[in-house]
Image 1 (cartoon, rainbow, N blue to C red):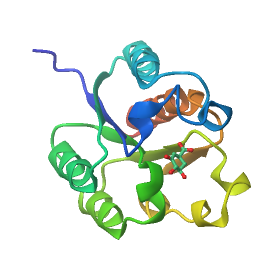
Image 2: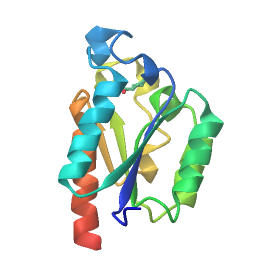
Image 3: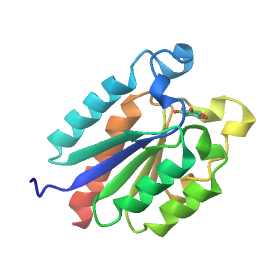
Image 4: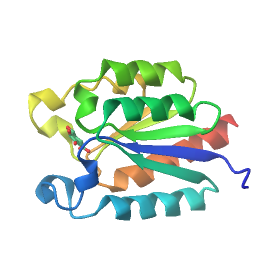
Length: 151
Ligand code: DHK
C-alpha cells in the first residue's frame, strides 16, 4: 500500500451529468474526464486521489467525516448544495484543520442570485469559480502547495 498523502475530491448533485447537462454552462467534459485530469494533476504532485460523486447530501457529509485522518485535503464541488446546505458547512467545519478548496465550474456570480451565496465558502481555504473544469486541476495544485508549505 502507498504511504503517499491523498486528496478527497467530492462532487455533488447532478455533476454525474457533466458533459451533457447545460454544456453552454458546464462544458462538454465528462466527470470521467475530470477524474482523469485530477488524477494526472495529483500524480504530478505525488498525491493519491479518492474521487466520489453523489446526488445525496448525507453521502457527501459521510465522506467528509470519513476524510479525517485519511486524506490530507478536500476538493469539493457541492453543486446546488453550496447554496442550501448548512449541514455540509458544519461537516467541513468539523474536520478542520483539513484544507478545503471549493470549486464551481461556472461563474456563479454571473448567474441567478440564488447561486451567489455559498454555505461552503466560509469553510474553504480557497474558492475557484468560473475556470471551467480546469478549476479542479487548480484546486489540486493549490492543495499541493498548501501541503508542501505546511507539511
Ligand atoms: C454546479 C451546480 O450543479 C450548480 O448547482 C451550482 C456549480 C454551480 C458549478 O458551477 O460547478 O450553482
